[in-house]
Image (cartoon, rainbow, N blue to C red; front, side, top):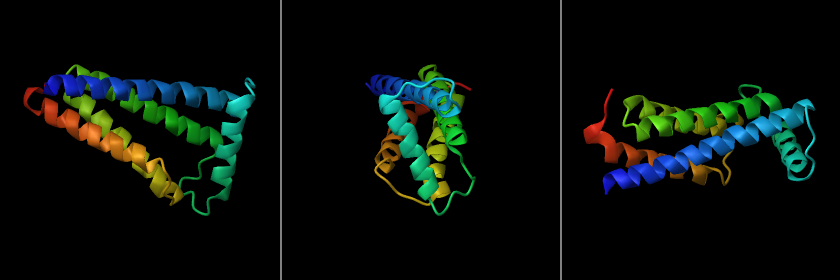
Length: 140
């Protein structure tokens, strides 16, 4: 039963990561003018530009493109982490925790708390459950 829980959570992590990679790629292209999908993509880009512009604190100095690049990095770490955890490799959990730290870093960087904090909490709980489920049978 523990293995099934770990598999389900890892598949959710993988789907989430692939979505982050896809959306961030779309948004980078939109921001750079490589394409213009209009509609929700234009609205999301405008919202991101406004969000970054309204922040009094932006420790790293994210621009919209670098912000979406960071989101792509987060998608890559959680996707590869999920694959590693599915294969019962310790590096998989290390990448999942890297994703969690990266997600938390965004709150620190912009010195803000928003509803996306729930996603961070869910990821932390999911990671803890995967670690618990796989703790006895992890392979280096």
